[in-house]
Image 1 (cartoon, helix red, strand yellow):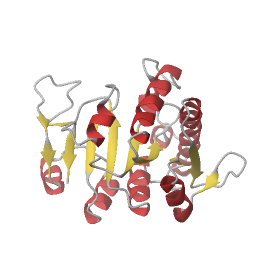
Image 2 (cartoon, rainbow, N blue to C red):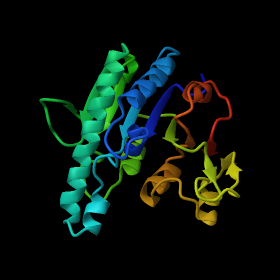
Image 3 (cartoon, rainbow, N blue to C red):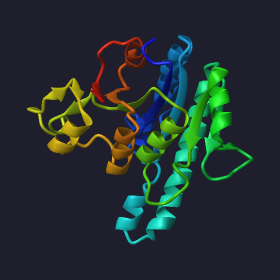
Length: 234
């Protein structure tokens, strides 16, 4: 396999499927099967999920809510999504562990780097919930931080589009796709890959990012096997 240990970053919105909000059980099941397929190849998988399908701290702040309070609410939304994915994975026969940056012992372990690494070595999927545990940081930053801490080979950012484009392909039909980019090119072109904190953290730690379409069946496995899926930033 091209990658031995990966950090899969999923957006909360991806879990909505065709719904306007919440969680689509069918989409969860599809993701669980995709992840199970790469576990079967011997790949170690860690996951970070956003919470935008339930609540966004930034949106709350825009409507007059205290930003810190809103961000903590967003962190709890990521835990709900993490628990849902954990349930779907275990239903598919995959062993999992959920670790959170905010202590909630009744439902998850606290994040401990050595414990997370040991779970991965034993073939368990480790899901990291509650972001970094700090307001003003996104789940992109949490994904990058956790990937660095567990020595992941790559961050795989699963989205609704099949890579990075010159513009939003869902709005601009003339947008063209990049196959590979350097970190400097992303800065120069002003492309939106991750938030700036997460992106800079990846660059400083030489951690490659691949943006790909998670909703196309088989893409995750093809990517792990080394096929040119999505856009590579390194």
